[in-house]
Amino acid sequence: MNWGTKILIVYLAFVAGIVFMVFTSSTQKTDLVTTEYYAKELKYQDKINEMNRVSGLSAPVTYVLKGDELIIEFPRDFNGKKLTGEVVLYCPSDENKDFKQSFSLQDDLLKMKIPAGSNGLYQLQLTWQDGGVVYYFEKKIFI
Image (cartoon, rainbow, N blue to C red):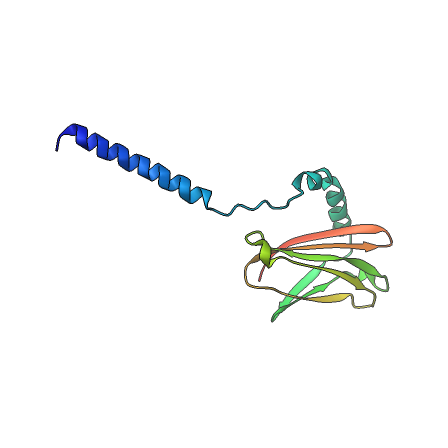
């Protein structure tokens, strides 16, 4: 085998490798984090203000995983008040595992139970209102 044939074999192997990489990269699933990312970016200062309100509470929002339920407890600052909002379990790796539920609470314990979902990394996102004041809590959890 002469040197011209060896160069041709190396060149064809290189081209085959590039074609294989282009094919495999084009079949990869690529999801955006959200479909309205630009609109959410413009409203991010509001989220920062809502997170600062949560930081100013007397106690943090707590959560406990018991079996297949996630129990979320709000601080005592809201005892006797009516809270309305939304809880989201956001799974960054698979949007089919996301969980979203609206809630309304009005009692002295202010505990909420939601299904924990399947195993994996989630982002717990809580948005709630108390008398027109909006609060936002966000925490990464592993279920």
